[in-house]
Amino acid sequence: MDKLEVLRELAIIIIFAKAFGLLARKVKAPQVAGEIIAGLLIGPSVLGLVDSSDFLSAFAEIGVILLMFTAGLETNLSELKKTGLKATLIACAGVFVPLVFGTLLYMGFYGPQEIGSEGFFKAVFIGTILTATSVSITVQTLRELGKLSNEVGQTIMSAAIIDDVIGIVVLTVVIGLKNPESKTGTVVLYTVLFFIFAIGVGIIVFKLFKLYDSKYPHTRRIPILGLALAFGLSYIAQKYFDVADITGAYIAGVILCQLRDSEYISEKMDINSYMLFGPVFFCSIGLQTDIKNIDTTIIVFSLCFVLVGLLSKIIGCGLAARLCGYKGLNTLKIGVGMMTRGEVALIVAQRGLSVGMLDHRYFTAVILLIIISSIITPLILKYLYSKNEAGAAA
Image 1 (cartoon, one colour):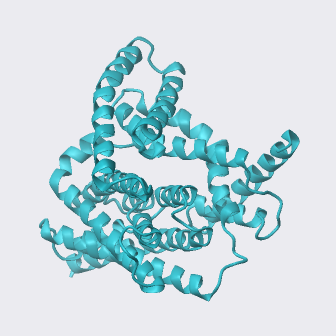
Image 2 (tube, rainbow, N blue to C red; image 1 turned 60 degrees about the vertical axis):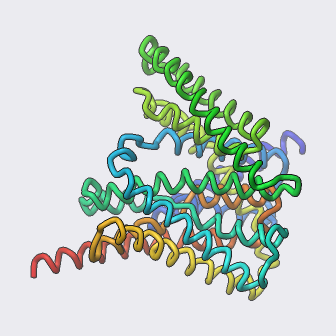
């Protein structure tokens, strides 16, 4: 691609992404939804101002790594330890039930798939997309209601974090199994070996960073070295363990999340991600979504995908919460709080596209799920808490 064309397309992407991102925020929708719609508008499906290219794909890849690195940095290990077993059980149910429901949904539309066939892996990948949870909107809602610090709020936050960790592991295993030469035992072995490697390296790296941070606190060298760690672990994960590179980026963030300057590193990463790499990534999803070829089947599938995505989280997490001792509306609050989807679902979908496990047209269903879940989750949570308060007053 010509260098001048690259500059023109980047300018268009940034302007449209930010304009539609702000518009989405005005109507109480996630900003990323606006950026995806911007990509859809300027892409081949509508205006044709920007075409998907290898250069933009590379930019989007960096955007994914930055997003996952930041997500790892924002992981609160102390909160995970507090809620412990309850949050883990809820998270496991929040992954297993959507995974099964999503797989069955695909087979319901396209017929039973032979285990190990390409159709089977596509079905499983639809379920894998549904395992992701985005708790940022739920957290903001609970904060506004003054319920973030209570047991239910803390459980939702911790379960969502564990949910994403398990979801990334599932993604890694599913992509590994897609390779015709791979075997289940080999994929699982390599995944386990990577996490053992990451723990060993992580302990050493954390101590080195902690020592360096004590000598040179709050300096730009810390975020630069952190970024190098994210890129390095991403490369090692994919190259030597056949594990998704985004898993390496996430682990890099987790390694540094307890560093004194972890928030400072996250702020610096967010600048790059917010200004350039993030908008390019989310717009690239819109660019790759072809609405010209959407037929009635895809529309019906998308609606069912949204319904299954919402209900599977409520059923899985709600039942697990009941088994963990939560009662009444609290079980429903936890289920509803876990049903929002966001960046992680998009990252999983994009990864499926890159390895041939997902077709472009299914992005419509993913985007629809993110928008609808992000809008109705705060409304339902506010209703549930108001009903609680009305009952207490009575």
